[in-house]
Length: 61
Image (cartoon, rainbow, N blue to C red):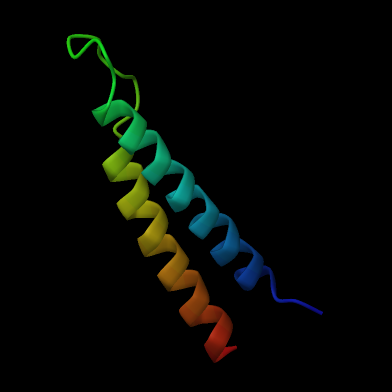
């Protein structure tokens, strides 16, 4: 059985990948004056930190 920590690490990694794509799209937008509601680089960094922590916990359990 797969540890729930591995599932959480995979989900966090998927969120980091999605945030990377969304940040790329935000940087290439046509109207530079439009604002976004989400700070995608922050979401990406926090998701990567969460993935690293959860993977570490899963590997040590």
